[in-house]
View 1 (tube, helix red, strand yellow):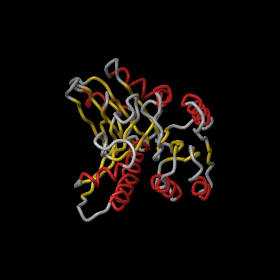
View 2 (cartoon, rainbow, N blue to C red):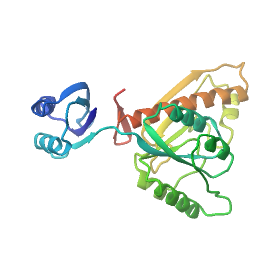
View 3 (cartoon, rainbow, N blue to C red):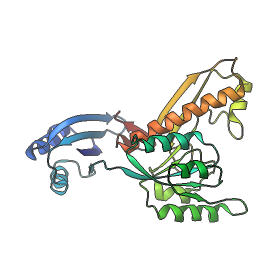
View 4 (cartoon, rainbow, N blue to C red):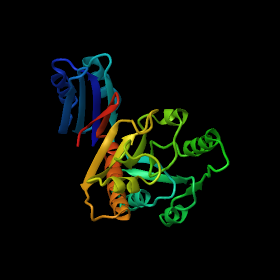
Length: 276
């Protein structure tokens, strides 16, 4: 299967023009999704194609009929290489490792990088390399340079912050624009800093949740990929709330990663368009 991904200024007749090119190349549309963002009139289209595709020829033909500013991408949606960054919390890492081991992710986890050694044993049980890169006693610049150098050795398509509890500089984020995925509890910015679940318990919150997003220079303000919440009540302790929060976080992160791996996510400005 070949995926056709188009993002361009909207104008009349786009679907007619695109499908005409596909028909002329004897390609069958297995599934098609499209959307127009009215704020700015931007057209998005994700099409699953069956048939023999000459990507260079098809790209040229589509370029000829689409607006000059069009982004056209053709991909066979191969498994993508990813690297996970972790600190001490195991729940998101373990969820992704198990899914990867059983072929549920369209990805190859190449390695895990941690600023603590707590999760080395878990990682190595799955036959994956673990790189321990401590940050204590080092400047943020020096530590980030070492992490970036290690990442470069794997040339990952995506980097996943699986509860990596470090604030990243814009210089770290820039090489991985729209390729760096983070998970955090949805209490931000109401409950910032240490022990967010204890703060939430003290305030008597009624729902808890998680948000997965791309990281940008504003850190937790990047385009949102997936979110979920669950209800809680006064009978649950802060510890029970934290466990429920971990359950939500790992599921939301796995879902967000799957959407990105399967090329279902378009980034437009600071938001996403998702064909689910």
